[in-house]
Length: 361
Image (cartoon, rainbow, N blue to C red; front, side, top):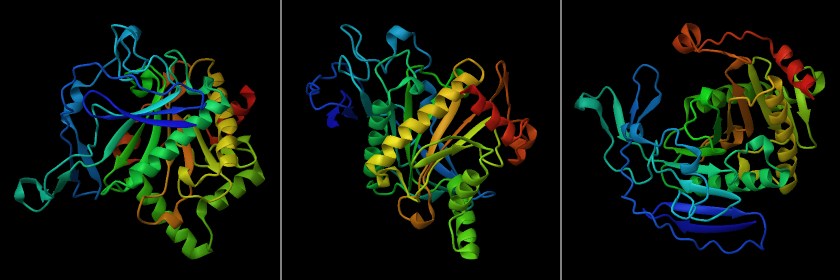
C-alpha cells in the first residue's frame, strides 16, 4: 500500500491510501478558493449524568443531499472540483470541513455562567472522512476483500495518528449508511472521531470488564465469544480469526458483533492475517444484511477500541453493526422507554435475528 499526504486549499490534510505501488504519484492540487475552516466546538458536562455533550452549532450549514453530479466525495472532474482533487482514487481520508470536534479548538476550561455547576471546555478533537471507493453508486458490501483490507489499514493508520494527538482520549471509526440513519451524502464513506474524553458507552463497558476480571480472572468478551462459538445458535459467520454473532441481549432488529479471537486493544494491533480474515468475514455479514429484506440495509457500524491512555488492558477490540429497519418498510423508533430511560425493547429475539441472517446464505 502507498500512503500519500497532501493538503486541500484551506490547509486540511488529505491522505491517499493506494493498493498498488504502480499507482501514479498523487500530485493534483486543490484549485478551489476556500475560506478557512470556521469551526467552534464546545463540550459541557451534564451535572446529572456525568456525561460530556458536544455543542457544534456551525454544523447546521454542512452539505446536505447534493445531486450526484455535485457530490463532494467523488473524484474531481473538469469544472467540478470536489474534496478529492484527483481524477480517481482507491481509499481517501481527509479532515472534515464541518467537524464536531476541532483540533485547533482554543479556550479555557471553565464553568457555565461562572456558577461552578456545569463544567465547560473547548471541543478539542479531530473528525475525518473516509471514502471507501471512488464509485459513487458502490457500497462497502460491494468492495473486494483487498479493498476492505486497504480500508482496515487506513483505519489503523488513522487510529495510530489520532492517538498521538495531545488531549484526544478515544478514537472511533464508524460508518453511517442510508437515509433512514440520517446520511446526507450517499457516496460510500465513513468517519473517524477523535474524542477529547472517553465516551459513556466505553466507560460502561470498561467498568463491567473490570468487575468481571476481578471476579473471574478473565475478560468478559472472551468468555462471551467462547460461549457463542460453543453454542452456535447466534453465530452467523466465522473465519480463522474472527466470529460474527448476534449479541445474546441484542437491542436492535438487526444487531451483529464481529469479534477477533485474540484480545487486542485496537485496530493497529491486528496482524496482517487478522486483517485479511476480517475482510472476508465482514463482507459475508454485510451481504447477509443486504439480503435480509432484499434491499440495501441502513445501518451504523462502529469499532469499539480501547481508550488511548487508560484501561487499555481491559479493552477487547470489536466491531458492532446495527440497523433500525425491523421490516422492509418499517423502522424501529427509539420512543419512550429507549430514548427516555435507555431501556431497549426488541421486537425479535437474538436467536430469530441470527436465524434470519443465516438463512439469507
